[in-house]
Amino acid sequence: TNQRLGRIPLVIGMPVMITHNFDVQSGVVNGCHGILKSIRYRLDSQGRQHAISCVISTQSINADSPLPYLDDAKDVVALEDKVSLSF
Image (cartoon, rainbow, N blue to C red):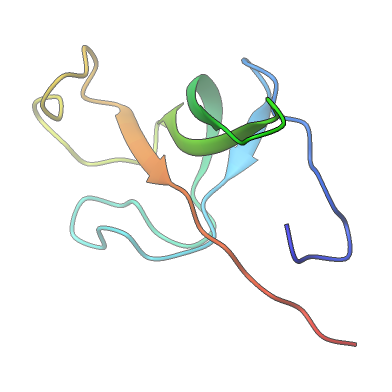
């Protein structure tokens, strides 16, 4: 990453927080808490893994039925995001 923190480990079952408003009507908003259920990676030329999407289970969502290809209506998808920080 271009961030000062470098790499942040992602572990299935860890608590996570959404930091963007993805779907305000359904409750997938900044500050929404959940648990990491799965991670999709891409490999770079050196064989290092880079997360491109994650499935997060949250009780904050107001959905009646699951998103396509997900089993639970309480699951949401977070996509890769890159942020550059300058100090």
